Image (cartoon, rainbow over all chains, first blue to last red; front, side):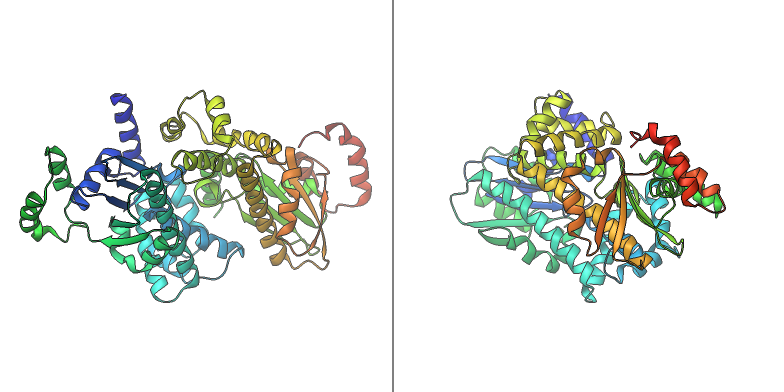
Length: 242
Length: 242
């Protein structure tokens, strides 16, 4: 069983899932919420949601990798940017400024050139995830397709969180949620879509501590406010870790 | 330029695109419609649409491989079966009999076990595409999720065809369409969704000749009914080639 977990771990790492595999994600959850009940949504190259309720039950949703379930992740957003550019190229889709941004970013003159780049591995999965930044830029400039992609990504992240919330049967309708990962550097495009699919009152919280503190907290027999307060003052200098 | 095409060709072949790369697809188009104007939609492991108008212009849409555009293909259908099984597992999605069918087919006891199988390559892309048959079976039994997947797949195939139709500016609103590939063995689930997204009158035609005859026809200076009629009687014994 433990061996099996290691296999999944290394396979998911190979698939671009750095540090958002279950164990690492639990550490991030405990750190981000200081061991308190709530939800954490992690979205970098991949995506996963975890939660912890009043009974210390922990469940996850998503984290199934780039083929089976990267919903809302950087890879998902970047991949959709490429897909919509190809749809424009095919005249299947609406025009989008993403096409020009991608061509400039990848230094290509014809949209079709992205295809061999992706399948030959010249653009890696991390490279595709990196294209998410273009989508945020395009959305800021008012591009409709970029907004569609980010809106859908936010809803998918919300659905991951909602699956966790349903299963944890929280005693309250007020739920704390922390957002972790590169995708949330520009969370203004994602907060409303996340909320829109969850019929609970979501309080977005800045992650309180980095994952390393989560690991430390998990080692404690009992997490109390005294310890957390002392940690708060100790790790305040790392507040920019997200 | 020719070298470049070869690269794309072999890369797409590696990506599971046997014989639906552009050149091969053109041969299939010419064969299926006997060189006449119309559209062909090819959906096996991958998917692509091609068309030819009265001016002998030929254009394509799709065929961008399993990451960027396998819409409606066997891989797309099989992948969605796995995704919906994992969504049920996460309680993100509705229950579906697909979950049990997949577990039996892959001889696993826990849905989660599909994840390392997919990323380790123990299930290949062709293996994922092969799961499409379960979706057709489930749809026949009235499974809602299976119907959703097939309906969406059909619409995606229709949108590929529609992109081609728009670009070819056919002189008529009556367009012949031939369907090629394993996915269309059970086309009763796909015909209406395909039609639903195309504002033209689509006449579904059985593919008239196999691709090898398409290659022969392409070599002729002029394709006339006389030649086609003689071919009809010659290749009638191969009518089950689709």
